[in-house]
Length: 485
Image (cartoon, rainbow, N blue to C red):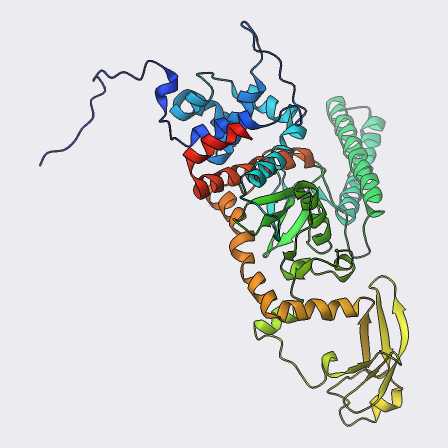
């Protein structure tokens, strides 16, 4: 049987010009044209005239390297540097330049504030190309691991445990030092103990500094929130999701409904989505210069105080947790659910299925909800006592300060229009995260701090948008239109 074999001694010649290394319709040319179309003055990235003998790489070419590299999952500065030497498309893109990995890393770190604005310009290009209309937005989030270990994350409880161990160790060391000092012997051991005592005191001071930082963060937390501090990346937080706990960031993303292009994306150190919906709408408005007609998000974003801040002209499609459970057949309606109690708006009372009236008895400022209760004897003597409630005080009904809004949101979600909008959410909002994590292996950030993670979020989102642009209108049309933007 004959086999095909290669011949390393066979003489071949690459094209005489680097320009001929890639075809005229190669996708790398789109990335080249895209960066050329960026307004570097708006990015606040200085571009001086190119001169011979310079020792600094041209920023525009370095941005091309980062955007193109992130589009193909090359995020490590070492991988990018290697690609510049071995990959023909990278060689073409940089015109044969081979920056060292330290140079790439320094550039990315130095200009991370400027890099995070690239996404906004990519959206503006998509608006001009009529690929984004901004009429409908789909909001979603995903957890990305920080470049930090969970073992380096502290809260008040862990700090107190660490201080307790340190104080115990220090006391033991002091006793040992005093004993050896009194005996005036074994000077070598005495010196070692004093050095260890110094180390323990340094550890104590470091933990005390962490406690001070936690105390400051506690002032900005609600009663239910626990402040955390990571010594490797102080700006990340401890996130528990899908039975996993990690030190990381939550990336919030707004996706346009027309072609699923990303309008806005940012990394946050807020571990949950509740209360984030209005903020994402406002950030998207800043990019699009207009408010969307409709917005859809999953139940994790459900927060009545936050929903009350959203413009009344926007149709918000978001299910309550009870609606989600009901769809999963895990929450069946019972005869004594709150929905079976009729609210009398004129008298501000609830009427139970047995006809008893519930009066307002209190208000919870933190939860922003009223409490309603009937006379205790009405509940205790009721034939349904034990089913409706087992409390000796009787049944209590909670009514949110935004109850009318709650009912309105529930009606919108259950309407035909709401169901049609929500059905598109998964295919639009979840696709970018799937592409980033599965295709680009971007499950964790390489840079530290919010400025660094936002720069990477911008690069990943821009890379996704360009990939989508190529899929929608093709390389040739993009190469024709990008230079004109």
